[in-house]
Amino acid sequence: MARTVEAVIDRDGKIRLLEPVPPGSRRRALVIIFDEPSVSDETAILSEKALQDWNRPEEDAAWSHLQPGK
Image (cartoon, rainbow, N blue to C red; front, side, top):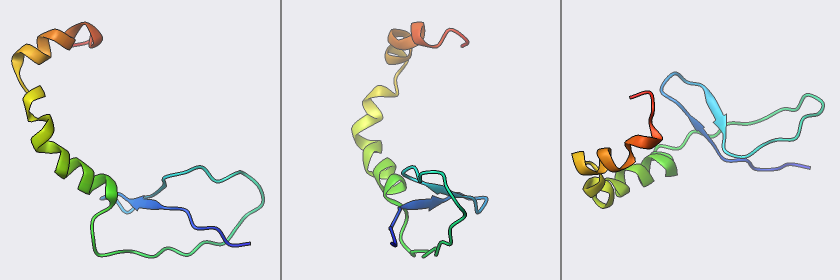
């Protein structure tokens, strides 16, 4: 039975599935490349304005305890 799984192709051409595929025997797959950006790219672009308030020194200081390496 055929199943559709969404994936993204990174800048290096590597394909990453967005949901797990159970292990088992080898399977064939088809890849369809769309002209529009992936949903994750679009979401990041649309979120920029909403998240710009977080890009301030006060926010960095408030969350610094979660980044001990910095």
